[in-house]
Image (cartoon, rainbow over all chains, first blue to last red; front, side, top):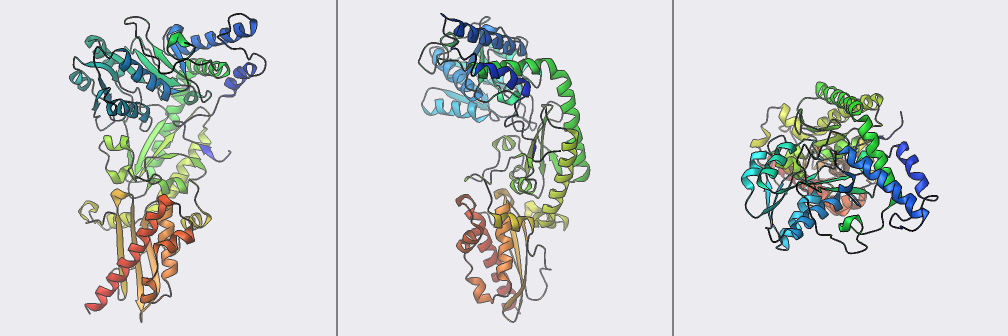
Amino acid sequence: MKLPIFLDNHSTSPMDPRVLDAMLPYFVEKFGNAASRNHAFGWAAEEAVENARKQIAKLIKADSKEIVFTSGATESDNLAIKGVLEMYKDKGNHIITSSTEHRAVIDTAKALEAKGKATVTYLSVDKYGMVNPEDVRNAITDKTVLISVMLANNEIGTINPVKEIGKIAKEKGVLFHCDATQGVGKIPVDVQEMGIDLLSFSAHKIYGPKGIGALYVRKKNPRVRIAAQMDGGGHERGMRSGTLPVPLIVGFGKACELCEQEMATESARLTAMRDRLQAGIMKEIDEAYLNGHPTQRLPHNLNISFAYVEGESLLMGMKDIALSSGSACTSATLEPSYVLRALGVGVELAHSSIRFGLGRFNTDEEIDYTIKKVIEIVTKLREMSPLYEMAKEGVDLKSVQWAAH
Amino acid sequence: MAYSDKVVDHFNNPRNMGSFKKDEDGVGTGMVGAPECGDVMKLQIKVQNDTIVDAKFKTFGCGSAIASSSLATEWLKGKTIEEAQKIKNTDIVQELNLPPVKIHCSVLAEDAIKAALADYQKKADSK
């Protein structure tokens, strides 16, 4: 077993060697511009791009003409939200989104709000981080032009009832954008069945290269139009200008094809490993709390709060395992995860959370090692924690008058 | 963010981690911070003839907070009450090479020292 272990697959994922193999010919040998219509170099590039487009569309049950390439999911989110708001400004300016969205959605909405271009409703979520479709329905006004709700959350893995939201959107004639960055390739996505009009996702979360993503833009029932956010050569049906990065697109396509072929077995394998990790930790450590939905969550996600120990120190004690913490002690604000806060998780437990993100290349041996390390460090830090000592002495920590600073 | 070697050393090998009985003779206890802020420090001193003969800490917080309190106990041992009053958070920042976002950890450690000294004084005065 090689150290350090990578268990932060929600942040990014290692590229699959098969993806790299597919990409390699498109750097030096087949370097053409896909927009060059008059020579063989251009034709070869165009063919590769169109093939990738098909592979990508297939994974989400779309038509290849509905795929718009972008630099990543952040750009896709920006393009979808700003593009719809601008295009449909005569109809209205109201957006409905949720409080646990990725910053690429929340900050885009906030930016539009700040410029006076939109009014935004941020729906609260239940204690598992789930959006209630009826809340979406109730928030719709005659000015609503877009609903933007994520498929699965990047911190806690909770999967939203997207199909129900899509149905309401159709019923009310409002466009539905879904940031599916964490869900595509991990769980089945069907834009028809889910009633999604715009869908953001990227390659690097699914063992593809960084720097390439896509926005699915529905072509019929209804035909969705978005205003381009960048002027230029009018690539991607005028929605996103810029020369296509052919090697990245080829890699994205291959990554999608692999996910499509292997999703069933991979998700079963990851679920089993994740459940073993969860059980192994919970069996030995008291007052460890699962964040997110117990069943409706991504197969590779595990987010746990360990009472009485601080997240950053947990990570520091496990420096040979790459993990992420909901604690924000590293940032100047000292505000812990807004996602956990939105679930109603107490601030002190939000400071104590760790996110495990499993991936294609993790092994059982790595999981065993992680279980052992987590138990070791939590035990060590609790011995060091004045809060744990007080709790064991029977002091109610909530009754203590803390000198906040 | 990379930690300095000294922070890592204190984190991996905390000095004087533990507790004295609060009501023990000559013991002063300082508890500062709050769980909502992500750090709580408990610092205790044991005083004999105006000199700190022993010190202990327990800390809930990030690596820098743990290292700051660990270092504080190391420095307190052997100092007189008067000398201990002079320990400044900037000394801790310098010794541990703390980055700007971690300066609050050193401030907390200084507060903990002051609180422990005040608690000792209060107990001594009430005798």
